[in-house]
Length: 269
Ligand SMILES: Nc1ncnc2c1ncn2[C@@H]1O[C@H](COP(=O)(O)OP(=O)(O)O)[C@@H](O)[C@H]1O
Ligand SMILES: [Mg+2]
Image (cartoon, rainbow, N blue to C red; front, top):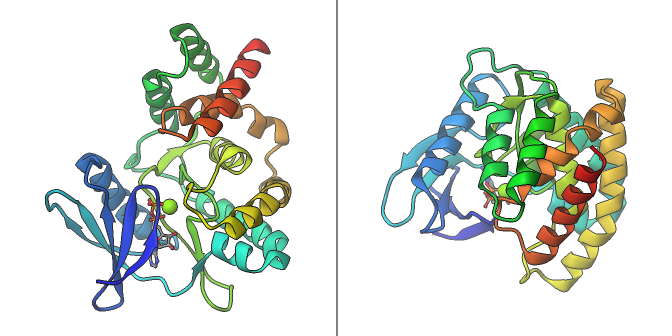
């Protein structure tokens, strides 16, 4: 099978009949793969634009999922190929993200945002017990909602067709129900601090650094404009979301930056 893509969790291979196989790294927990399969199916059934998840392959040592193949490019690839498109694509990212948030998880199929964030904060070894307690206590005051949230929404998880008028959101392992402001705050944290894998081509690295601030400005501003959400509502989620991200085996530079952000914000509580 020909490899057509690579992420941090898996490799993507061509698969017969216009499908792809997402093959997870050998040490990846089966439960997380099952979650991705289940959540992708659930949001597909709600009519969201996501690739259909067709088959869960419980093979040892590597688990896999067969998905419908999307013909197109990721937003990140397009931004790097053509920097003139970054502003327009960032606004489109906001429209796409907002369209997910228009749906609710009334059936309670998805895990809740506060459950997920609390678990991750408790699990990180990069904060003290006292810091964790403060963040979790603070989060209790934030809104509890049931909107569909992606949990890892960034331009490498959105694909566009050739004519750029149709998009699909991929990579639903972290899907949850919650407050959209928290989901956007998470994207803010990723865009602000995220780095590409160390073996990425240097020109792509430069393209990404250029794109980062333009993306942040245009995506956030446009999301606020179309959703009616306030900047304060969004800001309020940054502390718990950044603290929870510390549970993700981040490269040291990213982790150091986030620890500082979390500690600064705890001091302001
Ligand atoms: N259904 C799909 N159709 C076509 N390409 C895909 C599909 N799913 C993933 N890809 C490609 O593989 C890459 C990694 O997939 P993703 O699900 O985001 O994996 P990871 O969890 O490792 O980030 C994507 O950025 C995209 O280029
Ligand atoms: Mg991905």
